[in-house]
Length: 117
Image 1 (tube, rainbow, N blue to C red):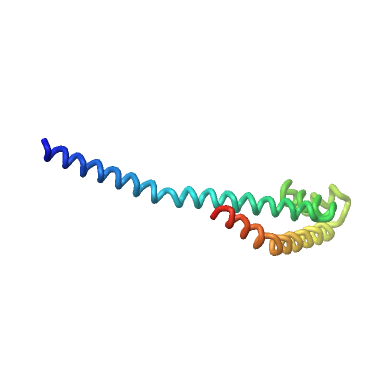
Image 2: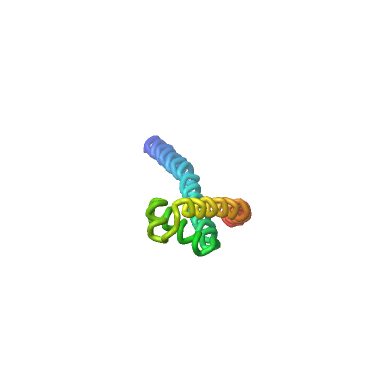
């Protein structure tokens, strides 16, 4: 009877150790997923701020192109401007957004990582 209790005890310890190991292995994945979601959300917020900072015409054309998936020709026809003007607005918008990200992501991500830690 004592032998069986000892074997059962070691069996339970083994199961408990395996369960703890599985939980420990999955914990970083959950933390990584949460951190990734926070970073993604932060990038989305920065992108929205950048688009909102564009001049009205640039913002409108950028949204028509990237959100509504209209072609440059369709945008030009709807707004009564040339395709070259549409292309220029999109190019300027992309340059501005890239610059905005360069200025704001280091600070935002540093703050975000500090909050996570």
